[in-house]
Image (cartoon, rainbow, N blue to C red):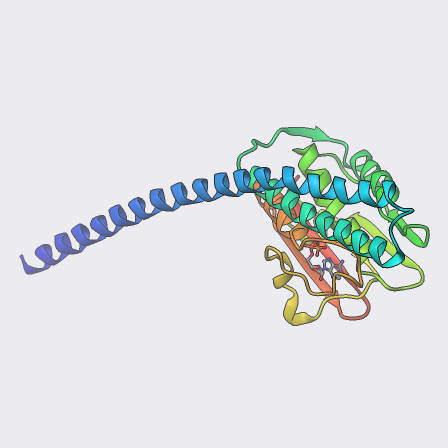
Length: 259
Ligand code: ADP
């Protein structure tokens, strides 16, 4: 009798806890949605006035170049740079909050073509790519993915591989591991560079939002959100992402996708 009573008391307690947990979960999900909406609205509303400041500073430089001395021009240029950086930050915030809401459009995708076009765009938009050797070492397999978001993952990883690199001859290799070696029902892709590398103790930190390890001024602008976004996209596809690196020698970012 005693044992039975104890058993039902435990069951009742467990049920009560489960009920409490479910309520907390609902509450958490609501806060998450609210936070997401807040980030979206705040960043969206901030963008407009900032664009105005950016444009007016640019006009001032262009239209009043004759009446401004060197110091004045240089200060205005700094203003343009700062607003640009703030716009970048807001854009990633906007992107980040929007990601949680947009449904993935999963389609069988020729990854090789997708990565080639990402590289084309990066070559145009990044300042210094003439001394970079970017190679897809063998034809990438087709996978089912959201094309826009997967482009974002490759774009973030490849642009980082170029940015965080101070070698005279930069090399970026994009490839995938043979499934036999990984023994998994997923395909592991990688983006490898011969850049500055990441210290062991920072390996997990790089995926944290707005975490930057290297001085922004030294390695070009960035917001510290790129890898957080990449992680979120990969995880939404059912994969995982990680990095291996030797400080001073280079890094390899890996991520998996269901095959
Ligand atoms: P961002 O490049 O905008 O700073 P990311 O989230 O893409 O933001 O990267 C976060 C940080 O991780 C970077 O600031 C940099 O310090 C480090 N990092 C990212 N990719 C590499 C890489 N390929 N090699 C060395 N460090 C890297």
